[in-house]
Length: 202
Ligand SMILES: [Fe+2]
Image (cartoon, rainbow, N blue to C red; front, top):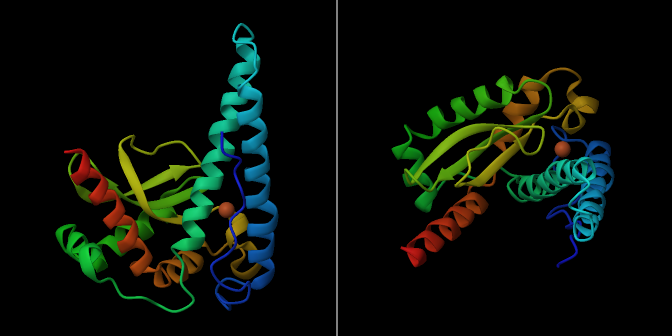
């Protein structure tokens, strides 16, 4: 089994200022994300040896696996799909955005998803493999509410730890800035990988 590793940020800690400050990014990446990696590794290791007759212990470990592994996967995507400079959609992702009503509509839906998350969670853009279309959605915490069979291609963290130092309780300002700095080239690359995998399996 592969040990999970905290990925390096693809940019400097101060590269996203002023809308995402360096102190927040240090805490968010070095503390929060690292904790998810460490706790996911611990849960995965313990699940290898847990006594299956101990249902309560198993359930606790499974909950820890879902929460912390989900946190690791989502944060890894999040760092990669942000850009210090705005990037315009091009290529296949631009075509899928048009099919979904256009980039402005998708942006509005993603904003609504981010603002609609109750408590902690994520606004997400996913490629639904059943309808073969881009869909906006929400993920509660790190692991609930996501449609099985759809592949995440972009995510926006709306946990308060992502924005509270700079934006206080103004989630809308954080969401607007984060969506303005989505790296559509990286998202296009992820979409290409998903559709290539589908083509290979059909
Ligand atoms: Fe986070």
